[in-house]
Amino acid sequence: MPEVPVAFEIVSLAVIVLILIGDIVLAYRRPHVPSTRESTLWVVFYVVLALVFAGVLLVVDGPTHATEFVAGWLTEYSLSIDNLFVFIVIMTGFAVPKKRQQEVLMIGIILALIFRGIFILIGAQLIENFSWIFYIFGAFLIYTAITQAFGGDHGDQTDTALIRFAKRHLSVTDEYDGGKLRTTVNGKRMFTPILIVLIAIGATDVLFALDSIPAIFGITDSPFIVYTANISALMGLRQLYFLLGDLVERLKYLKYGIAFILAFIGVKLILHALHENELPFLNGGEHITAVPEIGTVLSLVVIVVSMAVATIASLVSIKRDPNASLADLKPSHVEAERNRQAEEEERAQHHD
Image (cartoon, rainbow, N blue to C red; front, side, top):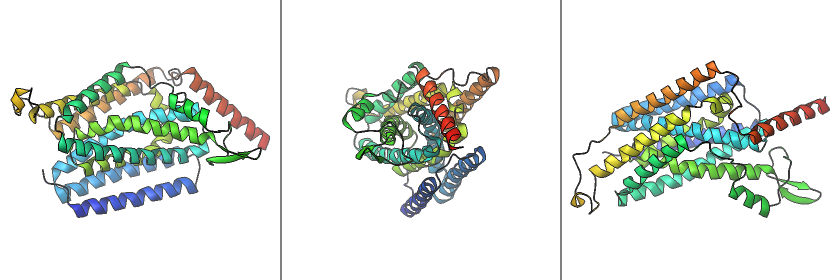
């Protein structure tokens, strides 16, 4: 398959970096809780931006890479929504002030881009040198899909071994000091809880990168398409967080849609590995051409239908039981959210 023109890759990455810098500047110069209208406009902007990029890619390079980008972008977008659920759990569990959540999310997204960039480089090298790695990627995605569908929730992300280690070995205050990472308490320099939140989000980013990178390499083997699809999926994640709010927690069938997509791509990877087989103990090290290969267009259809069915089923469930908003949250998270709201109300009354 021909590669994407180098000039197009350079220009595209330069434009993406400029947009990211602009987004970072806005997040830090105007710390606030965005309205539903503002969040919606930003989410629509990033979705349109991804579709425009796909259109330009279609004109410049033809339909193959453009279709791969759309399929990869939708896959990463669906996995990012799952990532978003964990961000909500972390923000609630650590009672991060609403006004500062934009900044924390922005750092989390930057960390995700860095980690995924590293994993993409590693994955590309593994694929180039070891074609049998597709067997491992496929098996891992199928295992992840089973865990996603039947393994319960994501666990308490505020009480992991890494978080406990950080709290034991770092001087951390109990109170936030605006958006500061460090503050002074009784003459002593200490970290604020924002550091612990960033550690939790960074660890989550690593775990989700382990899922998402093999998944998108099941759609395309172009590192450029893989990375641009990841960036496009992550760029609007901050605004999507404020737009969806607790609705993400109520989309209870979403995890099954994501699990089906992961399992489907896992099977696709294993079929591809069989088709390109070089393992000496399988078919004498020869390619197994009799097995079918799943095309990108079919993958795109499966991804869209899976997410649509899962979302519609969840919305129908919400309509039937509109009061089940926080019922599925762990008590610790609900309690933390109520405490945070109570503290904000108390501070507001004191200020008045």
